[in-house]
Image 1 (tube, rainbow, N blue to C red):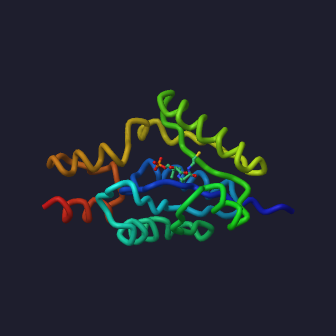
Image 2: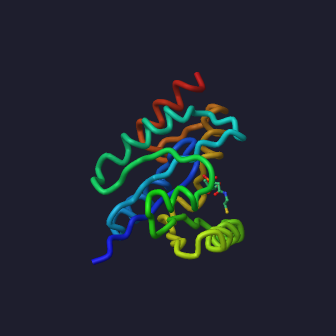
Length: 160
Ligand code: PNS
């Protein structure tokens, strides 16, 4: 039987409950799931790469078939290296679709053997994004219920 290895790529700055919802769904239908954290030299993140890896490793602990890894460069090259069959991406609303379609089709052009699979997070997370979570925390708003408790603590400490 063919084993399906999926990569769920992103910046995860920070990981939110929406990401976790998708990880839980992905862990159920794929044999293995790698959460691929992009090392992006262009962006100035709120959390360092090491901090994001630590938080991700802590929150994915309940799923034995989920791992966290850092990658740099092209996603398709990383997928080839890991011999992954699937890229997992979340679509929250129609507004995500255009960008996601463009990336999925470009990735298919670069690596035709790799399939992008889209999953929808729970409706209650459809308005949630890492960017808004960072902004709310930095402006002193409540992020309770939007991120896992470990992230909430770290965010609070970061913006104090
Ligand atoms: O957290 P994000 O910003 O939604 O994640 C975007 C990500 C990491 C999936 C995308 O930027 C990516 O794949 N970057 C790696 C470089 C690459 O392969 N670029 C070409 C994409 S078609």
